[in-house]
Length: 276
Ligand SMILES: [Zn+2]
Image (cartoon, rainbow, N blue to C red):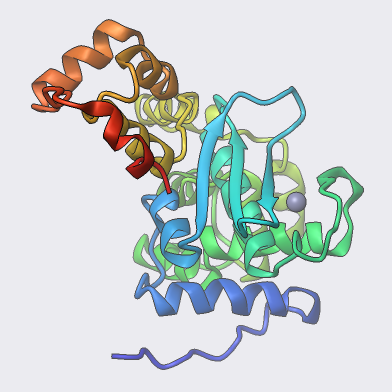
């Protein structure tokens, strides 16, 4: 079933069109409709199967990057751990945008602060992927809001529903006429944290922040290392370090899951078979 492609909304100007269409195309091809994306890691895995995703600690001021190994034709999206979950999601979307538009293959240096066209395009792509204008409008209509009468509480609802930064929500709401330019400017300094505190979803926010603060090594890497553990090639300490937990916890979780190293007969003969 191929959903019919909706016309590009009038609010999408020529400068946003390419990014909008790419984001909308991905939503359509995956049957995501207009709802929030629960698991961006999984989505990236579906859109770009050869790309690994890692959440890791990065120097202050660095939100994300794409590393490409030209020889093995492998890319890794690395995004920073942060206590601001919406920021991590927008970074993941931004880096996926670079992959979708093959910006890194063009050999462009990655410098988001330079605000080159491809950086702006990656941001725009991320915004339309995470909080599609059609979805934001449908969501607000469901809340019985009328255009022009949206309040800060409604911005908060969009931020929570789509798990995006208030800036993404404000841009999308403004472009569809839900809020005025004055409101957009007035509410621009709002953070998701302040909205969550004010409108009662701080518990959810803290849970999301705890998740976005947790490093997540690339799934493929952990899977290979776990395979190595089963085959007596990787220590439980190594696996624990990779997962970012202490050895005791790692061992306990493995035991609970029934994952054990194989009993060794002649393990060394297997060395060549491990890895890719
Ligand atoms: Zn970038």
